[in-house]
Image (cartoon, rainbow, N blue to C red; front, side, top):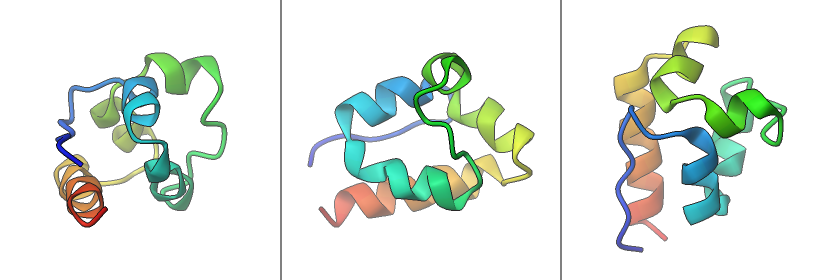
Length: 68
């Protein structure tokens, strides 16, 4: 898949483009992927709220996508 995620991207946009990433968000503690916050929150903001390192999570998502 030719798609790269950045920390500034909105989670809803990431899920729209690559719904296969949903389990990664669930694993970080973001269980309400359809809620308004997920649809309008950046990856960096969500990581901050859930105590996850945004740089590492960005890397993890991109490695996951590259393997698809």
